[in-house]
Length: 470
Image (cartoon, rainbow, N blue to C red; front, side):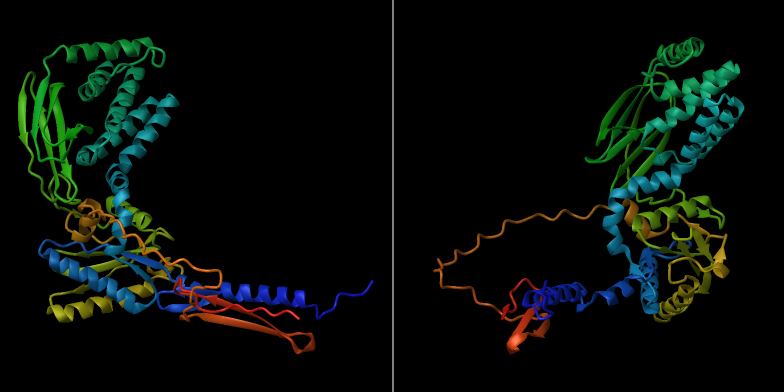
């Protein structure tokens, strides 16, 4: 049987086509023009960093804080070791994740303690369960303005009451069950799920509270303002909430871009209370108080862990002024889950010199991370920059700002009708900016076999393909 000829035209054609496709696949269109894909891959290996503003120390105005944030982003760009993601690029990523971030930062410890308590309760370790539920209750008490799901409040008090009842601590159980009824007067316990004695104790508490005259809350608010009472959303704008159990309640009114108002209320039996909502931009400040978080703050660490998660970056810049006007900048690495040492400097110089000085600080800080986005071992720190949570206008915009206005699509004019074409008519081919690879293989008899591959940055046709096979 004769061997296939090495000069077989079809085999030459297939070999040329495979080589051309491989080389064509390496050609990638970038904003700067077509380049080989290998170069792009190398460029994309640089770690990414999110710049989410600067926390003020109490004296700096928003304009100054925004400018320093821009200088920090420029400093990382000058360092040329990072892909910098700033506020404009982060807005779309944060908009659908706002509630998740706030829940994780402010309510995460309470949820963790609740889960721990339930595990102890299911294992009949009631003393340990009570301790965990009390921690959950304490953690939540300072962050009630971020509660937008009543189930967390109910579950903590319900399981606390169940644990006390299982221990025989009747008075403590009644107190916890009373909190459940205060939050949700319609709540009942099913005898198929709970022991009859516990159900009977709960019903006794519920009947004594429901028998009292309820209180009424009249809320006057602008249209579109979301209103929550005790973590339960009761409507938008002006609303009336009736049949509230006498006792402690919390009101949260909020509107994206306009701020929020948080009010604690102690309602008496049969009382009608009027509340006029006046929104203010509180940002991350709790209960309207802007206070420093210490260098060991778990809340600050959770905040920047969530920022890194939503931003999808390897690193996040953490920057804050102290009360003396000194700026401290550090790095949080999502890759290694570590914080870097901080670099600190005084920015009391003139604005022009200040920008240059900030960029120099950042260029030094950039050396604290390796090429993978992890903090270098000799630069890891257990401390976090002490900062004011509610004094970062960039981060507050990302978490509480008004969403961007929707883009209204307009109908495009109908395309002009093209004249009918005959079979012999063809569309003209415009030469364009293309990258071509011509692979030629000399064939038998001197005939040439050529294939023209093109990667076009525009959809316009840019060449003619001619194949000649002897």
